[in-house]
Amino acid sequence: MNVEHEVGLLIDEIRRLGNTNADGKISVKFGVLFNDDQCANLFEALVGTLKAAKRKKIITFEGELLLQGVHDNVDVILLQD
Image (tube, helix red, strand yellow):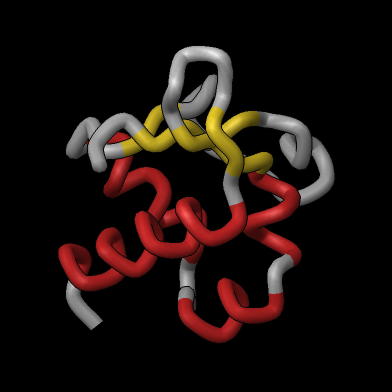
């Protein structure tokens, strides 16, 4: 699977699982994404897809790397629609 395609799938999943925040942007907790069965089936390397989308300024999150458990409450925010 290519990165562009996976980033597109990630955007769809953030829209499906997320909520609109105070800034009007859609956000979802990393733990929700990581523990979702559909996401687990779609993404072989969710963290790598998140990093690629962050580099392209499609999403943002605090820090450089998100790890299960430690960063479950970190918001992943969709910047582009």
